Amino acid sequence: KEERLLKQLEEERHMKRVALEREASLQQQLQLARAEIIRLKEEIAQYKLERMLNDRIAVSYSYHKQISLSTSTTEECRSLQIDVHYRTAIVSRQNALIRVSLEATGYSVLTTHTKPIKSVACGHFKDGLVASVGMDCRLKLSSLSSASELAEWGLSSPGWSVAFDSIDRNVIYVGLANRRIAVFDIRRTQTAVKEAILVDSGNPPLPVHSLFMAKVGEVEKRVLVGATMNGVFVSEPYPDIHSLTSPIITTIHLDIAGSCSGLSMTGEDQIFC
Image 1 (cartoon, rainbow, N blue to C red):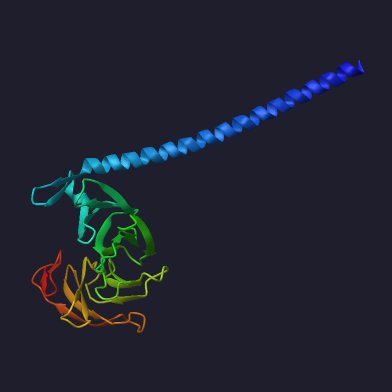
Image 2 (tube, rainbow, N blue to C red):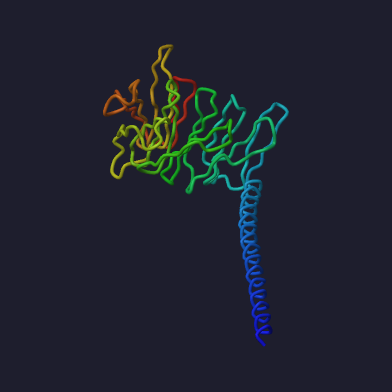
């Protein structure tokens, strides 16, 4: 009788061990299945994004190497910049920043914001740097050479315009919705170096919707040209943005008839509003 009980106990232990091993195996399979589901969901989301962009953006080439970009809803694309050195067009479509090759048929997502992108700028030094700002109060720095996002900074207000310094490759200027200009040094990854109010755009304040940086003559001097709906301003930044309370030496306001809803420059001496 004692041997029978011992045998029965051993059988129960064996069954329990088998059950535990089976449970561990099922748990492992469950974890693998969950990981596979997450991977498939990410692939599906990426596929849907690429499919949506493919449906919205068409790239066509003419015999004269002219390229036209078209979208089914044109109001969704706000900014377009061309990096001549990298032969690349950068297009902002809603929250996504798209890079389109001027020599091939492909495109890819360079970076994304959580709200619509308002402005895009390319660097002046053939380094493939691209800055973007948006309604999510973020400044993002991306690279065409690595096809990736390099850094991002928080803004005190939604970003409406952005421009790289034409002399100092480390400096970026951002026009904000609260009429301020924020100055960033890309070697500092925390916050803006300085903020300055360059224009009295009324109450409530109007956004600085346009910014351009231009050199003046042959000397190492540059000016920052920008605009709100109320008019155009031309400012001269200090050579060293870290040295003083305000990064701007002086600002000239240009009176215009009517409202200024857009600003562009040809070369370094003509302003169109």
